[in-house]
Structure formats: structure tokens, C-alpha cells
Length: 321
Image (tube, rainbow, N blue to C red):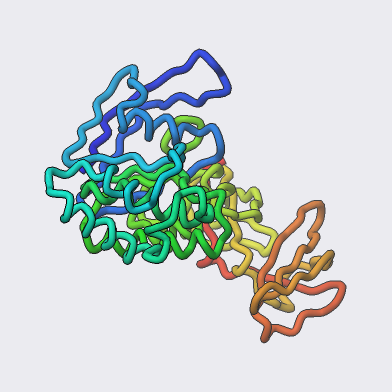
């Protein structure tokens, strides 16, 4: 378990983001993805938890054996010997050898055990390095974007093996990543950092479906934003009065790309470009002075130049101005 309570950190250099009143809890066996733009404070938080950096205030409680997996230089030696010497457990050499072989089997580099590290590919070296951390039976693991330089196939291969092992061993993980798809696939919880401040915490599904700030919505890939005002208990939109509200202040209407439908009662938009990706049709359109990005299934027959569109109100959400 890792418990972070009101942690603050300030730096003199403006290029390095500090941390402002960060409180998080990573429960036993929980995979927690930490996301945010470059310079938002993700690595600073990892370094404070691992003890590499001292917080200015606040507390960090760590219960269990903690390991930080990061990029580091490895002296060129035999893979099997490297794993055995990396093992700090109080067990005899035969058991260390067996553990090395077990992890080679888990991460599929059994045939490389007799090779030197310099003879391995980048992906194989990452597997060996990961095994050298896990071989010490940590209950807590910190991952600071360790696989970003690998090709997508190799990265997916390593992540599948890693998180399958983590689930079996009930290891808690705080994982810095920029890949939203991977976070959605493997994480139980997600936190968004914005220049040292926590914007939102929740399950990946909760955060993605209902971002609570304009920053979160933009970071998560939403691109259609319209200002709407309350009128007679509803919202004044380009499609007329929609929804219900007791609010008296303007809001930002966020329209997911898949919330648009063809409708004769809709607004006229001009089609600027069409892209077919996978099984979906992606449109860039123009309405008034606004660009609207839309997504339709291949079953929808789209005109070539202009069309009328409406929105499914239930698929949209509102954010404070």
C-alpha cells in the first residue's frame, strides 16, 4: 500500500513542475495509472515516493517492499549471471538459479539465458531488466514510462506478461504512462496531473466518460466545445433548447465525436475532409466559424459536401466555463 497525504514540492526552475497538495492511495494489488502532459510532475511524484527526492511537506507512507523500475545502464555480462546477482533474497544459489529460469520463462527469454546482455535486442534487455526487479519479490512497483522507446508490438508483449504476473502476485503498481489505451486496458484507477495539481481521480472508464475539467477533456481527446447559456430552465444550443438546468451561468458543452447523428432537423455543416480508419468514418466539418469533428459507423451513408446533423444530448456533458 502507498498512501500520499498533502504532498507539496516547489522547484526554483520553472521548467520543473512542482507538486501542490497531492493526496492519493494505491491499495494492495491495485494498478494505478498516473497521466498528464510533459512537465506536469509525474516523475517528481515517483521520485518522492521512491526516496530520490524529498517533499517540502506532506507525508508518504509505504507498506511493503518497494522497487522502482526505470531506465538504467547494465554492465555487459551473461544474462543468467545478471539475474542471479540481482537477486537479493536470502536464499541459496540453486534457488536463485531456479528463480532466474522461472522469470526467463514468464517473460519468454529462456533461449537468451546463456547470451550476454549486449547480444540482446532492446525489447529483450527490457524483459531481463524487469525480471531483475521482480525477482526480489516486491509488493509495490513504480513504473516511470519504462517502455516508451520500444516498438508497439514489443511493448504490448511486455505489458501483457508484466500485468499478468502482477495480478497473480497481487503487486501494487503506480505507473506513469502517456498511453491512454494501455491505461484503460491495464489500470484499475487513473489520476490526471496538470502542472503539479490533481485534476481528476477515478477508474479509467469514469475519467474518460465524464472528465470534470476543460483540461481533462482536452487531454483525453475531446475536441468539440461549444459555449451554451441557460434559458427558461434549459440550455440554449445551436439545436435549440435542450436538457434541463437550474444553473444561471454559461457552461461549455462537450460533444463527443460519436454523439452526432444525421437529421433533417439538424444544423447545416460543410464537410471539409473524410478519413476512414478501421471500421469508422471520421469527418472534419465546418459550422459557422467552428470546426466540428464527427465519427460515424460505416453503415451510415454520408453525403459528399454538406449535411444536416443533430446531437444525442445524453451522450454530451457540460463543464464550467
